[in-house]
View 1 (spheres, helix red, strand yellow):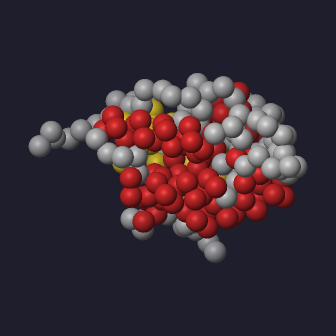
View 2 (cartoon, one colour; view 1 turned 90 degrees about the vertical axis):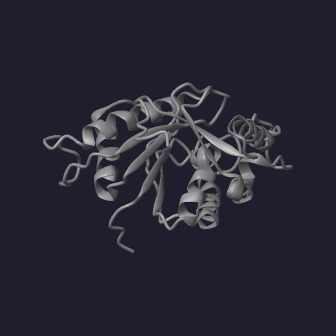
Length: 233
């Protein structure tokens, strides 16, 4: 299926990153008939549990639960996400191909270095994608996105704004539950921070942000630019 453009495009370092930070926001926009895509920079081949085939199957299931228009995975090595022209151009080409209105990336303050590297790379690529004379790997016209926002994976940070996801929170958690190899401790797996009440921590953060804005569940985002309000009434 040829995709003309996306309304929202979210980048993550690994399959499940985007769902953790903004699965509810994605589900909400898809329910509003918006086209949403996710691009994972790596296949998470160094994960303590599961393997590449399993993670790809789980990502496919999560994508179907959310109703994504596009799910793509790059072949950047896990723990090999580096700031270089080749990687920036790879992301630039994706932005120019899908021409999203809004792009999302992991917040750069995170316990996992890959998440921070991904966020910084996407920020560079968003800027470069709008430069007419910047040459990517493909011959695609430049594209300026309307906004770049950062979502949270690990940790609790003060958001610039929150999105009410109360009506779709159960759908978000179902999408996350598709990643059984990561969040469920089995006889074949080893204990990691992800198998130790991680989903409960995600839900707690969503509850905390929800309480901050007077709803049951919400997801928080960082904007490095001032948010524009046309009128208070």
